[in-house]
Length: 333
Image 1 (tube, one colour):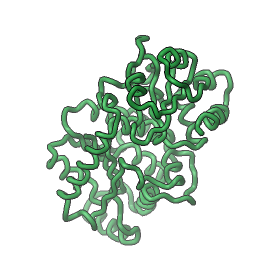
Image 2 (tube, rainbow, N blue to C red):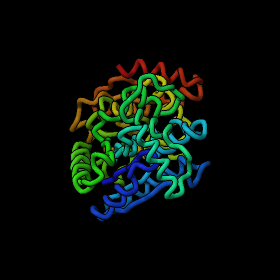
Image 3 (cartoon, one colour):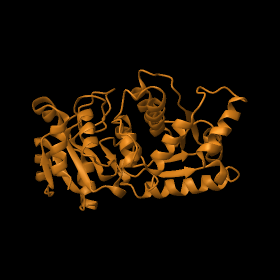
Image 4 (cartoon, rainbow, N blue to C red):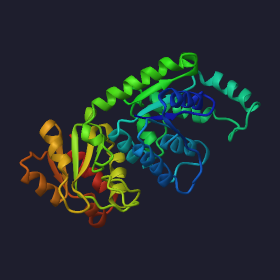
């Protein structure tokens, strides 16, 4: 199991993480602002490391921290679509997000001021980022859209409804960490059980997303690993992967709706995960992006819901991301 702990400073996040790590005999990884110009690579390396472990893993801070702290203190992140791509990886491996939140923002501000007197803190006032976390989890339709994935999530109702997100407050759980850990483990196990099981295997990288909420299976042509030779489909902060993510943001479309795959692996062999998934779950609507994916799916006898031009073609020959947005708007209905 992978647990991702998020929240502002001073809400008991690290205490909870270390307790869970000890209780579960899990590995614990605390991420910071270590590589300010390489945050996409840094956070990608963290989740790759977590996936490869033979034990449960606790990650203390991940992509939401970059998005929200950057929005509050640095005028925004250099990687606004990073969270959308990384969320696909988290969902693939049935990771469980735990949002550690202040029960009351006014009370939180007072307690944080007291905390600063006892230990070093990077920021003098974190009330603003605490509100951003609160709005992200519970939603705020009046939130300003700064073109970040977290802005979309906040404006579209927040994260509290998602099965892979749990709330934590010191006031509710601080003296019952064992009980909270049991709850988190049971939720994580249920979320893993609801996934298409072969997708949980790190040796099967050519499928992202989670089965439980997916309506569409988006199939590209062939893995073309540009970023550190990784075989995850549509995972690259550039080229057609970024173009596609930006278009989805503008639709707007939820990551919960999709599973992602390529019809062929990088070596040209067919991706058997696609056939296995559709044999077992033929309710998924297949969107083929590109001719190779279409030919492959048709040759296997599956029904095509929509066939669209590949994002790489759209990006090279039809230009602006809004062109891709309109194609996706038509396809997702």
